[in-house]
Length: 322
Length: 76
Image (cartoon, rainbow over all chains, first blue to last red; front, side, top):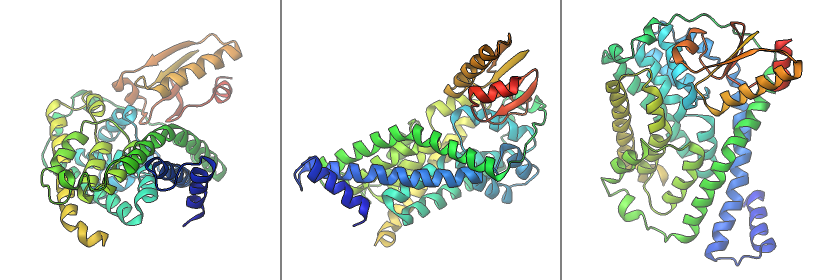
């Protein structure tokens, strides 16, 4: 037992005086262990990635991706999406900036897919709640989906499905100041404070709901409907997840609890990816630069990819987890 | 002086506008503060991460929200 876990148990059973082995006691012990653990991990990861982020500015991404063809460009774009922050507010300027500077459409999409899905917040939560194996599986399959979906979009000649004004913009170059190490660290510190403050409520709510599920839902209550042997569970999870607007911080703790109650690994992965990668509000914002057909293709390719990831891992999960 | 706040209207842009107003008050500068929400116009400044602060047509800060103190230094 690690010290954090002993501390949580001491707090719940001694200080709060909840009875050991009771439902409320189990739920509280789970909550008071997981919240501090995840927050510490999160602060650490966000700080490291924020330092890295000072080297990966949008201007440099534009330069690195400009003029790259399919394949290598898609891999690079998916990887660059990992340390790059992404909120739906900046999706459109980023999209315009990349396309306008000559980055191929498919490469741009690889970036747009990987950036919200594979990031340090998801990684910290997955690592804290699931361990390194599932974290690695999530990151690798997320990158693979971003690369493959980007290549498919790139090969489909969809350039005409981007709103015409995007190609007419001629942007001026913003000066990209290089930073001193001291500035990088102070930037990373303020980013860490900002991000941790922003996602903490989601983590508390997510882990809170997860704790209730842990304490009160009967073991295996999902094994029947969302277990490895129910073929419809994956598509249903993805169809619910694609339009749903939530973030990794709120979703991952709930999924972890659902998995403990019998949801299969593949179904859980497919659900987490579809929730984080795309949402209805994001599609509405992207409508400003993409014609409806391309948005539909984008959502469709992602949904199909996540279903495939889910089915694949449901098939191989027994080998991976044992 | 013309101050432009570039952004689609997310909470960060509102915070930036608020900070810019405070900075102007602090310095006693009479500036025209304009919000730019049109993506084509935002992109034409070369901005890829919002919000951004533009003073007299020059991009000063982008991709983060500077505090009142930092804006005061920029405006001086």
